[in-house]
Length: 130
Image (cartoon, rainbow, N blue to C red):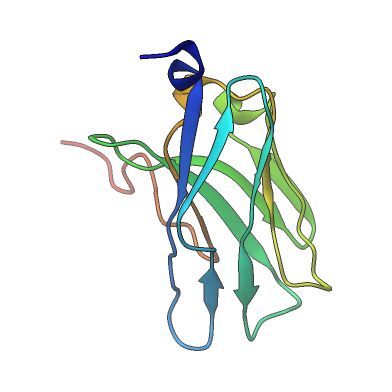
């Protein structure tokens, strides 16, 4: 295996659709880049509620649960601790998009990334354990 192949990253996009008129669309196929580079993954959305936008990005690695990365809202944003440094997304209401940018790519960034209009992964229990 050549050194260039060892540094090759493959990032895949997965389309997650919400119910009713709300949808998100990501371009199909893989995004290929090199270690240390930068990529931007696109996500277009349609929603009937344009005043209270909530969009989320998730990372899904084989044999693991999807990980919450970041959320962008009409009034604020949040990044999971693991995704504070090199990951960013800007909610663009005029073009109805929320592109995810990953900087200084690492081999561990190879995964499926998807955006959603609703939280799709929750953690913790909603009732006390007995």
